[in-house]
Length: 150
Figure 1 (tube, rainbow, N blue to C red):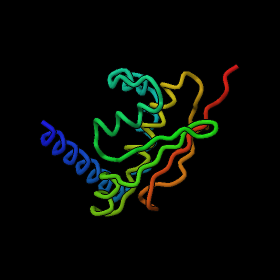
Figure 2: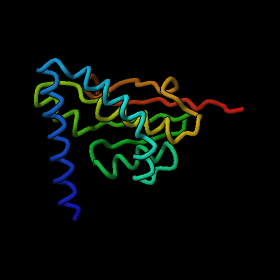
Figure 3: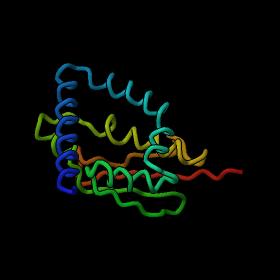
Figure 4: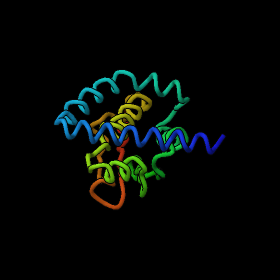
């Protein structure tokens, strides 16, 4: 079963990487990413429910479990969390297939929407900072600041 899941995860990542590079060649990538972002913001709560996500740390752990694409680790920070990965199958495949950036449309924006949906007002997209991605550097790092609700 694990072997089948691994094959499905790799096939899925390769399919996305191919699509991202096709969108880039057709000069449609930015508009596709923006449309996906709007849709993801509307459906994030449903995705969280389907995956059984109840807190923001679980967004990262469930993405690892389901997609097997990145090796996310999440650490508590002074006023929030820092999530980091040093490997991503999607970024690596996309680089090999032409170099188009899949990070925002297929990973970061969906997770930001899911984090915002599950955080019950403690986090919005303005409180999430993408420090780096594996398309430009040696890690992908996200800082999430928790707002104090009074």
